[in-house]
Length: 160
Image (tube, rainbow, N blue to C red; front, side):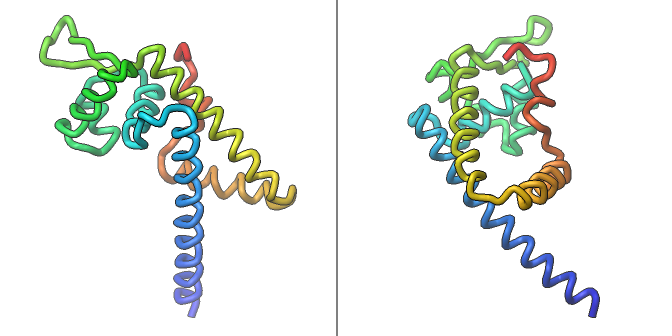
């Protein structure tokens, strides 16, 4: 009996998280479109990962994005043409390509995050004060379980 009630709660929890993630993806898409309608969500993810991890090899970027190196290369080709990232070769290993954000790329990430924070704050204004602590605790636990980091944690030490 206990296992069945836990399973029912898990289904309810999964459904709630799927709904919340769909809402957050919509907020992300609107925030990105408001700042730069020429950057797709997958391309923006490249910018965010590069911003959070700093200059890195193309292979490391592909791994972080969980895409093939060929897919990462095509995404980076488009972002180079948009002058949002730049490529360089490692002086010790010319085969190794390093990816880093340009000032324009950092600006896009910063502006999208500001826009997203503004919209999320408007949404949070609809949640009661007692519910907010529950939301904070639940979302932080979820983020920790995914291995993600808070923005201020990943930016420590980087000149943003």
